[in-house]
Image (cartoon, rainbow over all chains, first blue to last red; front, side):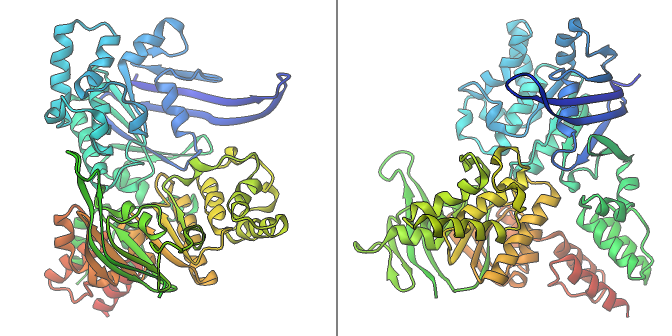
Length: 283
Length: 281
């Protein structure tokens, strides 16, 4: 079994009026099956409202399933006694950096997580040191988080999660509120965690360019997984993605347009280098 | 001409240890009917600049003229300026507060002191102009999707009947479909209503696709001001200040270096496609 596995996972949001009568039911997750192997870098794509964030909250035991089961690191999330261990093994980074920073000093903010799970003081400082180093924020350890940029705050939030040493981290649109430089830094930090520490990463995003380097991609719509595969497999299906009103990376789109116009360009181009190579071969 | 900025300077916390000069000697002329993009990394002065244009921030020195009138004159009507130069802030949906969508859009014109009938007519027209479905007019705004909420917020500014509409990162946080929707709407308002548009954006691809003129801000100064092709030709200098040209620009430059006769000024996917196909004809 992989580190995260779901089987027939369903989540209904039920709205009730004042008299407790059911007003409406919204199915946010509709029989989702996925299996994530330890150490993978996974991307989840989809529109606002497609169920991505609901799925993320299940991985962290913040929501409980209406139907179906989810296992994190082999533990059934629905069992009361597993909730705390599940949250220790799956960390989460949210969209808005301002909503997840609580301390007045950067290093205290990073120490908050490990302190809460009862790590001995000596070890907390070791972990803070390591985590800040990993996101390249050691320089700012004694600063106030208020004076940091969005990207820097987000990296502090990542360090805070890392310091709890989870096996897996879910990033829920971590770059949506950042400028291009902030986005690059945060993504780089996520990839480094995955490569050097072997942390399993689940990246939820709607920036297609961020997906290109993932090991595997799931595409969600209306609470269902509608496509899955490697980035190359997914982005060779340009027309299908367009029909679901999803984007494709600009280079993939250009390659597709050129192929449609009759140039012999192969399917599934992801990067600028690949497209240049393909175009130069045409001659 | 609609707005002129003459040697505008602005400093925060002057005379204290936190003194920051946010704008330095800004000279700009904004003509009626232009579609302008303002780019620059975080902290480059973009937001400070646009807040000067409708008088929300007062310049430390220098002058601003709206249709030839000095906006810092004692008898200048600042309230009128703010209705004629509309500003849509970042995440404008956070500012929705009324119980129904229609009431929320009425709020602006109501504050202009117009009579009830005119206010409602304007709200109706504004919601129609942003393509908002009629059956949702009297629903609470809080159940809408992000993109729809943003439409309502833009309608709220449109109902003031501005001649100039300034939007601060109107697509931040939206998914690709929501982004295309909002940008399409803005471009349509520019074409059909003849409103001057000033768009602050982080996305070079969006700017390349829509605007006629780009103003690049860096450390409080105007670094470049020109048509997209001319500005993106400076892609190496843009990179040095933490910006970039659209990805297509890089592709075209590299193809040319490898000997393919393509147009390096192409900035959109369509232009690049035409140019590459032409090179093989």
